[in-house]
Image 1: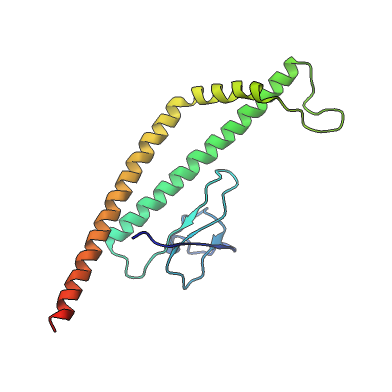
Image 2 (image 1 turned 90 degrees about the vertical axis):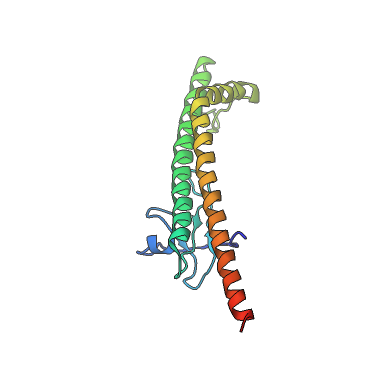
Length: 177
């Protein structure tokens, strides 16, 4: 069974983020100390991804720690990819708009101070070009994402199996008494 996720409240980061299941430089919110669940934070302003603060149980096994760390590593990798991708997208979009407006003899802002825009057909050229230019990068991202998630799923299966066997041993021990 997957852990229940709860929303975190904005707060200042605490010094021991790693011990609470959060990588340094992560989101500036934290769940209450008594929480026993993973928490989802507000969307990151650069990547637009919602960060997860992973609960670290006091009796976390080595296998459970491997699973949590794989999830944390994947989240950090995903965060970095999308922050860079979004920055690149915005930069190239601004350059495209500027070049098209310049070619039309228009300024970036109109006489009222509003930012000049292009129509949907003109922007479609940019979107198509951007996706074509980044096709290989997106293919590598998808391949790596599937590999990481396969590993996470495999570890989740192992954790679930260990927990089920532990429960069966406990049940057998307590029913036999």
